[in-house]
Image (cartoon, rainbow, N blue to C red; front, side, top):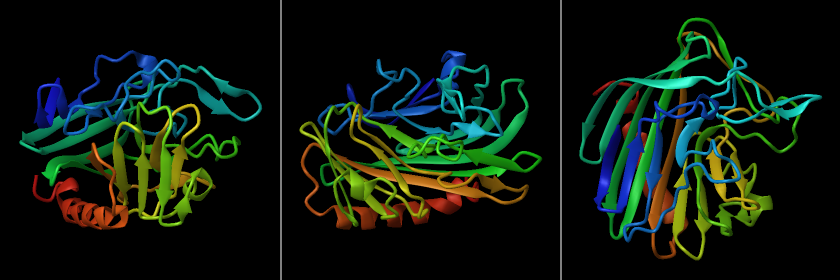
Length: 279
């Protein structure tokens, strides 16, 4: 099932349920997006990483279960294919124009429930740009849950895992409040990140203070990272809030900090609804 949030024809922001994906992809809902003129700004199943699914909430290690897809990094063994892929199952949703609220179960390979999630995705037009907001609230289904990344498991620099946005760009300039270039962006706790490519311009923002994982070599992609220097623990009754907002434009964003300020205000306003307070 596909839900259109904004747009018409080939120019659109849509969420795809993902239930029919192959198991090794860690089946999960994912978002595809274009600029208002129709230029793609997400990429699904590219040849280099078939399990990259546009924009999705992908975590490589939840109690040993992969919700990222593909291979798993194991200390002393490198990246290996394991039979450890989980799935995210949409159990309930509320849809209206520019708005998608969902309740999602995170299941391990045996069908055991590890996490409960409430998710809110929004999209609206703002003076020629499309703004997409994503807020997720995760809670442990029963027992304490821990989250890891390849870096926490021994692969330096690979602290990916979170709301991951994979672009189709082959090259891009990245800027944060800490400066320009990948060295300034990767690991930055800037509230915003700007991606400029010849095809389109993105400004991303998060309220979470999580460090940015950013790649511009091989492919261009980014996320606010959940587990960086050590495993993150989530005890029953404690929520983990994740969010990401992205402004999508055909033209260069001339004031990324100003754009980010508006995105952050939208994320803060959306947080109560993402928790289920008004759904």
